[in-house]
Image (cartoon, rainbow, N blue to C red; front, side, top):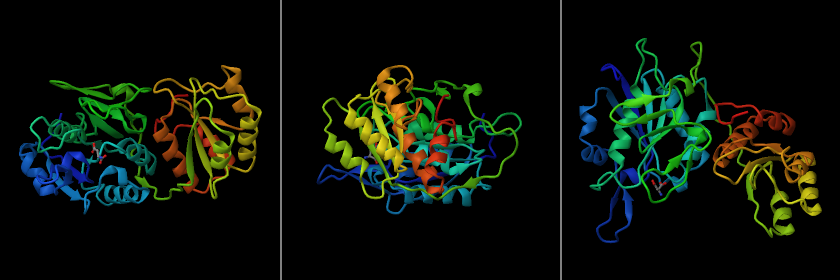
Amino acid sequence: MTPSNTSVLLIYTGGTIGMIENTETGALENFNFEQLQKHVPELRKSNCTIDSYQFDPPMDSSDMEPEAWRKLVKIICDNYDRFNGFVILHGTDTMAYTASALSFMLEGLDKPVILTGSQLPIGVLRTDGKENLMTSIEIASAQDADGKPLVPEVCIFFENHLMRGNRTTKMNAENFNAFRSFNYPVLAEAGIHIKYNHSLIHHTREKQELKPHYLLDTNIAVLKLFPGIHENVVAATLSIDGLRAVVLETYGSGNAPRKQWFLRLLREASARGIVIVNVTQCSAGTVEMERYETGYHLLQSGIVSGYDSTTESAVTKLMFLLGHGYTPEEIRERMSRPIAGEITL
Ligand code: ASP
């Protein structure tokens, strides 16, 4: 239900949704928010009041940086009391990282923050952008009979599916259904009606104050294993100057080679205070280091489980925890506790 007295702040960061083809070069270039509105006259017909904020210049999400996440948090925080919800238009390439980061940075969130974008620019006839945009606005302003928001979470809405943001991955560069939440069911499905899975949506019991966080530390590496990986590749990664944490992308349920040099390098790095988090290369499923001997050795080398976390979520959660000055031991411990529903224990 979208009551008519609701308001949504539309934050336009950039991405394909707001691009137009350069007639000379054929390349896609950003255009501004007014032009976007021209292509979506439906915006004016919406039940709720829509205000906008535009990144200037709009950015391709491949250029996304923690600085822009801080900016988004600040915009949401400064406008928190004025709006019922927020819709962020964002490029699809790094949308899952932004959604994950925001879910950690916006502590106590009790309003919807819905990220969306599109695979085809909004000015193109077959665009998926209009549908994504209009439904996101409807979700961001949806309330129950008591006036409480239906989805007070950071989410991604894409191609009919509303997903918890920190559970998503971009998994298709071609199709309209670009995002999936492999390890957590969708929060809502949009067909003729928007059907919400109320029991899966996180609600705070009491009214909370929004507590924005701005501190992030990006001294992180992602190390993806592959058969035949060289000792010097692992050694060089683990000895990067200033490195504080590693997301180790392992096989299956969290398995890795049992080679002596490999386990020794991990043990030594852990002992130096580098936090190493085990995340599976599989799209779905969870890390269970106790399951096979190949995983058990990692556990003994001081590696912590990332459970069923996406890489995007593990990376941004580490940035968040490292930024807040916790000790390596505290970070290891906090990696095994959900902050915003990002892991299933
Ligand atoms: N390169 C674009 C971006 O992520 C792709 C998109 O928007 O889908 O900004």
